[in-house]
Length: 90
Image (cartoon, rainbow, N blue to C red):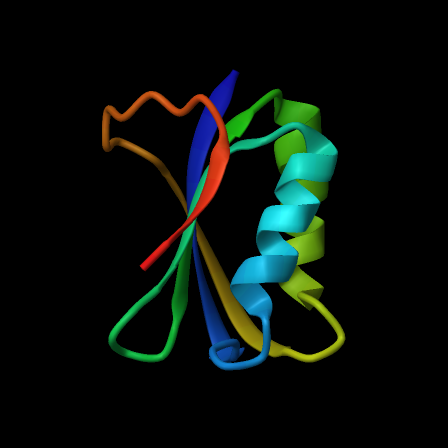
């Protein structure tokens, strides 16, 4: 099990990005959260097996059809939080 933090830039707020991200995470069995940031980006924290995280990252690079992702930054998540599900945070 690994944990990663992604910051997604582009046209990613107001287009259903959080909803579609949560749906994809649940489909892949990933836990964590998705949250809009004040600068217009979206933060995604994902915890799961490396293979599922890799597939999730590929999906985040494109996002849903309603979004336009221009940049994706991946970091190791060092927050120390344990996740039991995937949630949309406000």
